[in-house]
Image 1 (cartoon, rainbow, N blue to C red):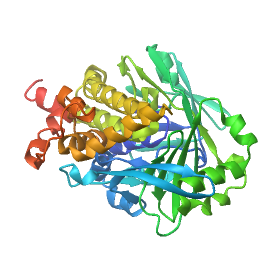
Image 2: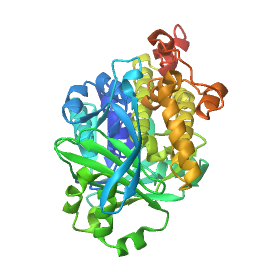
Image 3: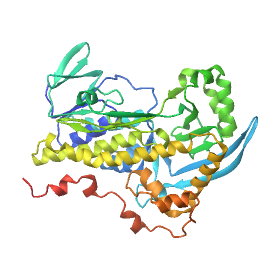
Image 4: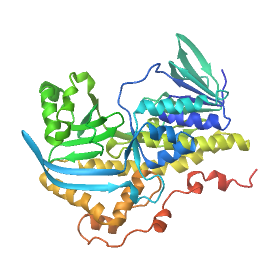
Length: 442
């Protein structure tokens, strides 16, 4: 079996890449080992840059119709009180509208819905898009992709092989890259439960020692993320579901009853956060995207978005190679040149966000509350935070920024103009530099 591009893994990253390539006349084959939809929790928060990419693929309207708008990141500090409503201490709202872009919000979409939309888009180009469900990628043999499907093993020859298999990546193993893993002192319990019609805003609720993230989904549901100490899952289960009911109710009374729809621990997924970042994104005619290349702490909601953004850059590069008659493998360095520094930046940003909620000390909480509020009070901090999280651009934090956030310097009164901010948005020349560097070259 022959194809121009072989993709191991049919998650959102692999599907976004395949849909883009097929739309541009590149023959692509995806091997996806799952035959049915997965019930495991995967990313659901689509950031503004990802919405822009989906717009370019022609699926944004369908995605928007399937999602719940998140226009703010809301941080609520409370003191929980047993058998009583929590005592509110501070509410800080950071707004996507501060980003100077028409993509001025994030979107919560069920993960499998996003996959379905991307797969359907790819199938519109059925001459070029070949999706093999229930096909397990086994690695490489004699330079070919070895795949097992329906008890038969066969090989696929491609000009480029893309590893989009997630954290356990045979493609990454074949590339022999270096991976440095970082673990955290906490885990998460995550589950989707019903929500009242009035519960439309997402927020992160914290006490001195508790953390509950709540992100509304369509169809009156809400994705919940509850922080526990690393290694405490068995002890939490021993306390029973009643313990979880009380914990949720004491942090968010609006969900005190709907959380009781949980009647089995098997409905609740343990999520163990850790990060890593490979030292190389490509080798020869092999390349990695998404979790095969990097994982990110979920605090900033970037994991799935990084995969789609990888797919956008790599897809544009490979399509350009096909259109210009240039060898794929000779130009893969552009993909790494663009994506690796951006991913490194967001890995650091997510890691810092995780540390903010990693320590239950009262003094650390006071620092956190002050720092979060100052991001809102100082418009430059506000804009930088939301711009960086959005993925639409990059604006590094300065020593002055950190001094203001640490209360060493006073808050600046000046509002950031759209003109100044737009200079920090990624341009086409930054997203796809080969188009400009290679102009006129043979």
